Length: 286
Image (cartoon, rainbow, N blue to C red):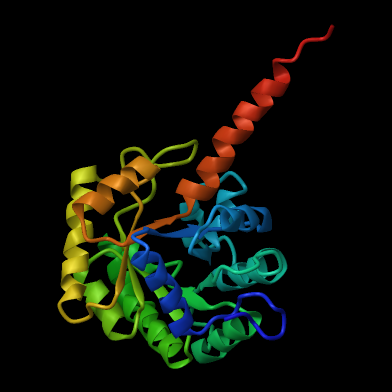
C-alpha cells in the first residue's frame, strides 16, 4: 500500500510488511534483506530487488572503510546516526521497498517509546535491534547484564515496537534469545553466527565454520518454530557471505532467506571499484 502523502511505499504497517515477505515466499523466492549505509547503496540495492533495506549505524563505518564492529563501539550515537542516514540519505531515494531502522534498544538515555515514535514518524516501516548485545559474550556481557544494559532491554524495545505497529526483524545469537524476541512480537528472527568473513576488513579467525553456522541457525529456528510458526527466519554472518554460501544455508536449514550488510554493500563496492579503476589504469597513451 503506497504512502498517501508521497505516492511511494514507506511507511508500511507491520501487517503490510509481513504480507510482502509472505508473497516472496509464496513465489518460492528467498527473502533478502540488505544493509544500506548510504543513499546510493540503498538506491541500487532496491533496483536489485531486495525485500527489505535495513539502516545500521555500522553502515557509516563500513562505507568509510572501517570494520562493521565499530558500530558496537562508543564512536558516536548509534540511534542518531541511523536516524540521520535514514532522513537525509536512504528514505529520500528509496521508492518502494520497506526501510527498517537499526535501534540501539539498550541506550539508557532514551525514552524508548518516544524514540520509536520518532522512528515511525520519520517514515521507517520497522525496527531492528542493532547495535545488539546478543553478540557480546564473556565477562563484558555479564557486566552489561548487571548494570542495566541487558539484552532484555532490546526485547522490551521490540515489545514496544509491536504495540506501535512497527514491523520487527531482530538479531539473536542463542535459541533462548530467539524465544524471548518471538514472544515479544518479533516478526523475523535473524540467526547471527558472527562477524562476516571476507573482503578487506572481514574477520578471519574470529568466526565459525559453515557446519557450525548451519547447526546454530537451525537450533535457533527450532526453538521458535514450536510456539511461533509464523515467524520469518533469516541467516546472517560468519562464513555465510556469498550467494553460494546462502544457497548452502537455505538447502541445509529451514531459513527463509538472508540478511546481508557487508556481504552486499561493502563487498559489492570493494571489488567493483578495484576492477573498474584497474581498467581505467590499463589505458595507454597513443
